Amino acid sequence: MSQLKREIISLETDSLHFDPHNPRLAEYGIDDGLDDDTILDILWDAMDVLELIQSIAASGFFHHEALIVAIENGKNVVIEGNRRLAAVKILLHPTLAKEKGWPVPKVSMAIRKSLASLPAIISTREESWRYLGFKHVNGPAKWGSYAKAMYIAEVHRKYGVALEDIASQIGDRHRTVQRLFRGLMVLEQAEQAKVFDREDRYNKHFSFSHLYTGLDYPGIADFLGVAAKEDESVNPVPKNKVKALGELCVWLYGSKKSEQMPVVVSQNPDLRNLNTVVSNRESVEALRAGMPLDKALEISRNPAEVFESALLAAKRELTTARAYLTAGYDNSEALLKVAGTIANMADDIYAELERKRSELAGRSKKNRLAE
Image (cartoon, rainbow, N blue to C red; front, side):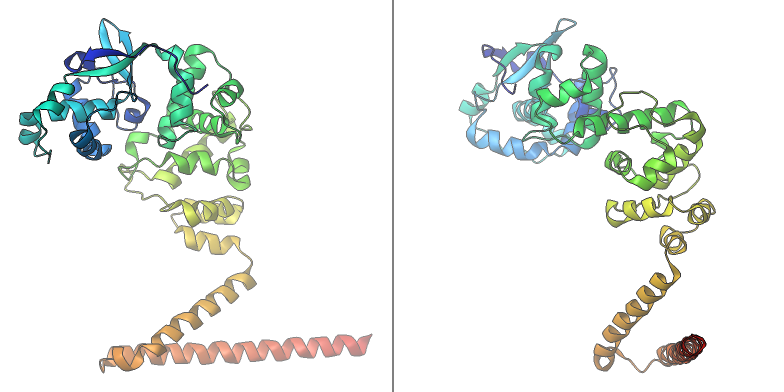
């Protein structure tokens, strides 16, 4: 499953080309029109090529770590090992690195000579997908979640392999393949319906895991009416929920055009909090009106729970303030007034609590006498 039983041959490094279809590059908007130099820049900026350069400069290129090469349109396209190829090309062309300001170590003539050709296995994408899937989706050199999803979708669509079979072939026992594919289909459905544009997201980084993970949460799944992860549908969200899908995507990723920041800043706890919010009609309306996630969450929670949480949080903050009072107070009159306001609020809360407690105690006594 994880091995490619092919002869390792030697190919001239200058004859090897980067793969514009590399799933990891899909996150950076790579298309077929980009040349090797542009791809090299992206590999350097985004994929920590320098650590490989340092390793290869010191120890050479390990023969047993052969590149996997597909011959496409008369070119030797490296479909596995693009980072290693980038490291070697940079070492072989120090002038290029100098022009770009990349800190590249000098290598001995022996190392440089050994890098003029590299070990390679000639294969095809269809023949090698099991090996690449095992290694990068479920194995030791995992890609990001979006790259994984793109690769799974390509194998499924191009080679007609069922998701369950892909999962079996790469040793996935946790339905990760199905979850990633469904997440990508939901994203593509949102873009095709023009309720969301990934390029309009507020932040540069695309956190695909927010979406595919969130679809497993019951509140979000119900909000979208999304199909089960085992379903291989290309439209997992029903038509009457597509508008809600657009809203969810904007809450997850924001919108530059609308100057709207995402409400999910970090997956934990924001994604779970969003799951709670979309399970409550009133809190959803609050989120639609532009209310922050934490305030919309309060609406969805039991008032008694919110009160207790706020009161305990206030106690914690005041405990901290008391501990730093001697060293931290600079005789500011403004801070003295703030402390006075807090004292008055605390007195009001305490008086109201006593009143309610007495009132409840009176009702309880009255009920007992009535019995």
